[in-house]
Length: 123
Image (cartoon, rainbow, N blue to C red; front, side, top):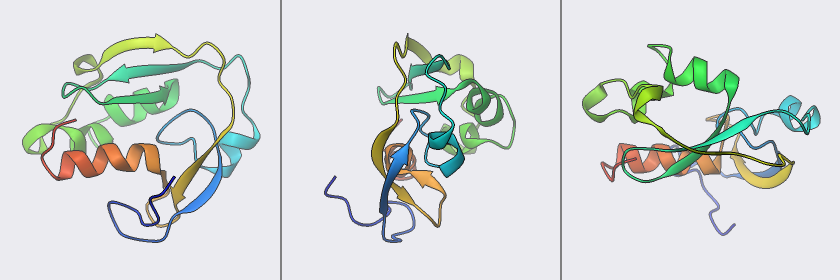
């Protein structure tokens, strides 16, 4: 955890407890109320990077025309959930530590995916 600034907005990062979802997992209520039997899926993006999503973020961010799927797609085109390859369902979801950007309201795990997409490194 050597990264000290957000790779997207350069705000200082803070360490916090997070749930497995890369998008909403850093929000305090998510880590505090993690249900061990909740389902989180690991997905592989077309460029090879992976991300873990809860069912809600799968729908809101990759099926909605205004979600993160649009930002991660090439040339401003939406990256639909169908473009992601299911890797696995996490067997034992648990709270962990990760860095979090209070400005972007996202975990470092997802911000790294966003920064790679913004840099054209592929997702």
